[in-house]
Amino acid sequence: MERTFIAVKPDGVQRSITNKIIAKFEEKGFKLSAIKMVNANLEMLTEHYEEHKDKPFFADIVKFMTSGPILAMCWEGKDVVKQGRKLLGATNPLNADLGTIRGDYGLDMGRNVCHGSDSVESAERELKIWFSEGEIVSYKKDEEAWLYE
Ligand code: GDP
Ligand code: MG
Image 1 (cartoon, rainbow, N blue to C red):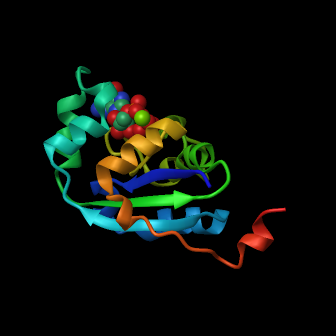
Image 2: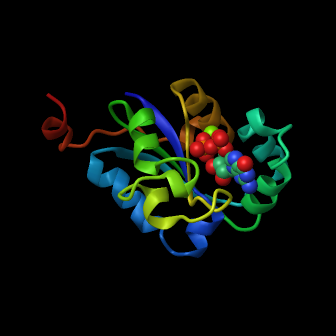
């Protein structure tokens, strides 16, 4: 089954809306297979945001992402990477549709509440940064019979 890395950023944790993000993924039908609070460090963030490490806003991302704990999660299910990006909405909350996480809860590009992997390859790469394989739990849910044909 496909899996993705979803993280509630420090703003989402401080604003007590982690439950809203979890609810979106649960209600859609995805399965939570790992979850923990993490104080990220520079090394983890440099790996995680590898594609942005030479961008002018990289220092701002690091400052923000180390400003408080992050809720790191692994979610599983059919097309969860693409579906997860849809649940998050556009990177800039101004362009994110209402009904999406960033559309409903964000205002600023640098405070957009939630991270979601952008491809299956990124997801696997990112999960390795944030979780050890033993922390990702494999289990079956009876509701799967009602979610999948
Ligand atoms: P994402 O995959 O939708 O999260 O977007 P990106 O991978 O392009 O960027 C990673 C994160 O960096 C985004 O979620 C934003 O929080 C932040 N970011 C991206 N572009 C900018 C920018 O131009 N300025 C600032 N301040 N932050 C940005
Ligand atoms: Mg990205």
